[in-house]
Amino acid sequence: MNHRPAPFPARGSLLGPEDAPPVAVINPDGKAQVLLFADHAGRAIPRRLGRLGLDRASLDLHIAFDIGARLVAERLAERLGAPAVLGGYSRLVIDCNRPVGHETSIPEVSDGIRIPGNAGLEAADARARDEAIHRPYHDTIAAWVSRLLGAGRPPAVISVHSFTPVMRGFRRPWHVGILWNRDPRLAVPLLRQLAATPSVAVGDNVPYSGTDEFGFSIPFHAERHGLAHVQLEVRQDLIAEAAGARHWADVIADALAAPLADPGLYRLSRY
Image 1: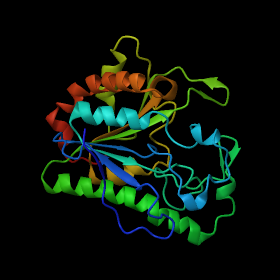
Image 2: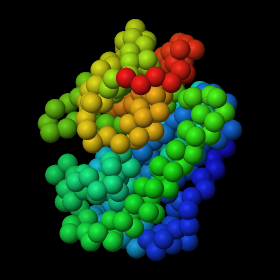
Image 3: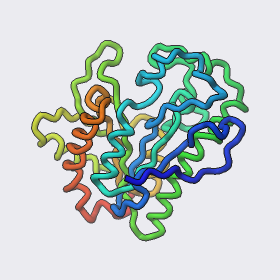
């Protein structure tokens, strides 16, 4: 599969030449009328920020990135023949699925763990994170949406995330969650297909809800254009390793086949 770093504006002082790019595009030559992205695929931290005051063990946890999401997105890109835009930096540096300036955009505490490197951040430092990481990532997605719309091929938009198996003592039973708000075109048939798949426990707007006000990427890149869309959440213990990620990506790709074959999915409609 073709892995190509995406072009992005000149880096500011936060990222140096030794740092990873803020965004990559997987399968950029994919011909499907589908655009995938994964906001929390990466866990890089700019060298200037050290480890944000955390030990290495904390940076292996779900607070730092969506475990397995990159593997699932890569396999879905392959199966669907679609491009996928992947965020490269940890959500602890700046969360690419939050509006800039939101109280959860650069968290001081995540799942009970304090993030020392985010405490009392100056406005200029927060702005540097936006300019170096958040903006190039979203500029890349926006460029792909614009390109596909300009070619008369409005894409179905699929956002790939993962969720921790246990949160606040509750063991989550779902294998896959489907998040959506007002537009049912992709979410509802996908839910139906997954529910009919043996041994798959699928959740409708669980463990998180697509109606939550702080989600940024789907409203910004899909809803405002009238593009059909869905956000996937896959349980992390199922996809932390390559074999499991491949299996669950294949389950999802199989379930997507019928919904994505519907021509009505590609008409611009606002709900």
